[in-house]
Length: 159
Image 1 (cartoon, rainbow, N blue to C red):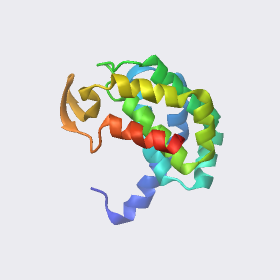
Image 2: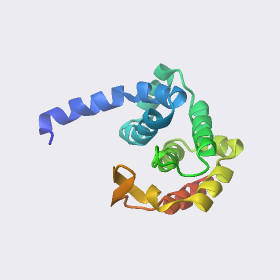
Image 3: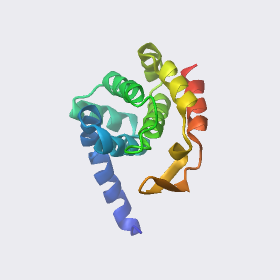
Image 4: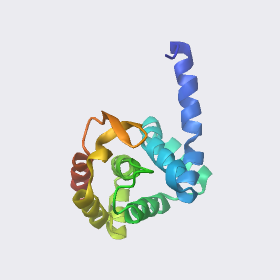
């Protein structure tokens, strides 16, 4: 619960974490990277285009470098991995959010081979990737959409 007068202050805190999140996506691996990739699209949704540009500038990361990192994540995790069961889903969610907020990203993602990586994820998708909450490696609560539905959305944006 957030008191109404504290909501905007907390939004500022979330937005201010954006540069840290972008840097971590570039240099972390495994679980920390999964968490940061999962957080990033939510931060982007909260930002104006100006705030987004400032976040990338502060992080010292370009949109092209982030797009490349997402393609690399999907290449690295061609198959679902129990240790990071949501990383591919999160990478696709961030890809979608980037394309929505900055259509110029679409061309970059196309040139980097994102379509091929999405096709690979589609072919290797596992039921575990449709869960949001886990107890160990057992999925307890499902996402609102399947990973294949996310892939279809990303492919539409890429075309």
